[in-house]
Length: 143
Image 1: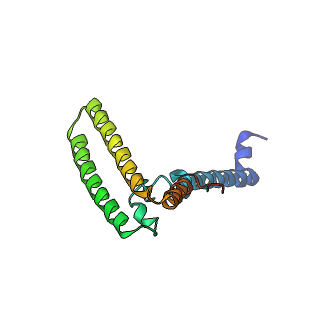
Image 2: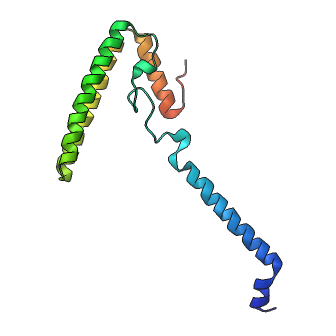
Image 3: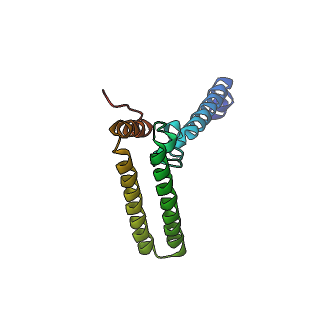
């Protein structure tokens, strides 16, 4: 049996087509999940891990806490917008990195301010930390 007869064999052609279809399906399904589990790579989670604040996660806040957190959030967003404009206006990578470091410090300071507001009520703070942990890792704290 020659190679040419081997290629024309219908059984080999069926196997070849099946293999091509299988490879295409495997590649297609692997690309569907390229964004990660539960689309976690997209922002959208509250608690400082995307758009939104702890106001959307914690319903038991007092009106005073809600007002203070909203004011802090507004001031924080304005400061970050200024830093983004600075970062985008420069072409120097070192300067961009320095501005990024400043931005990370501002974010941490903002989170610490919000935490101090929530420390008045330890149950809310614990609930917030549990929700953050659950959103990030999918785990809940053992109680």
